[in-house]
Image (tube, rainbow, N blue to C red; front, side):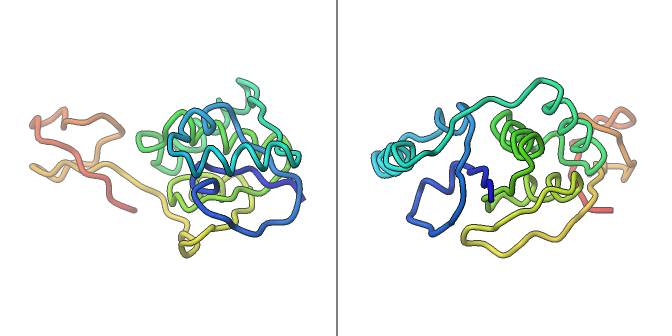
Length: 151
């Protein structure tokens, strides 16, 4: 079993069996001593750090647009979903937006400490006039801020 690890995987000692993978973006997010030590230990044990292809990342962005998660996914989130898609692996993450997009792409998810996320499709709604808006931060009709709501 191939498991792609999000940054939260390195914050504790979680028992997972299989080949572990992550991306350079995840490694860059590890800033405390404990997570860096855990990463180093797992790397010595065979953890693979690799970058997904631009094509896979584009597929993830497209899927995130369909689910309404595009504006909440970070570059790191996109990289781990894309890598899991490329290698046919499972994702180890507690991030609900990551789980949602992964689910839309048919990628299995293993929550680390949190419950499994329900699959949702999101839309942006104006807090002023209630208009449904494709994307952005402000309503093109009245200028009020937008809020994310599930459909």
